[in-house]
Length: 87
Image 1 (tube, rainbow, N blue to C red):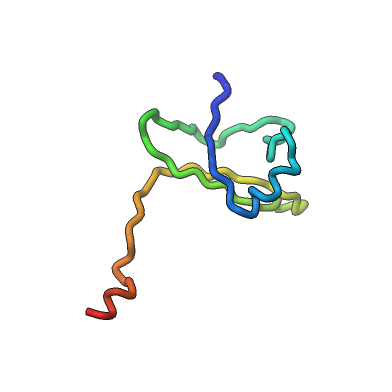
Image 2 (cartoon, rainbow, N blue to C red):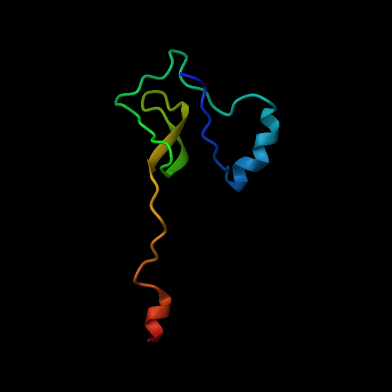
């Protein structure tokens, strides 16, 4: 498998702190590597939503970064908008 990149756009708070990282990665997998618990299949031509979350480990409270990959869902405005109140 060749190296693949999934590009994300950082939030404003992260953008301001990224300059202090230089050319180092913002996060790495565990020193023992990453072993998926289930197959991860990303089909070419399909849209996905990628989200990065900060967290901590259960045992030591060490900081972690999680990448969430889910099918893309177009924005659906709710039916309870303030404009409905004026009808």
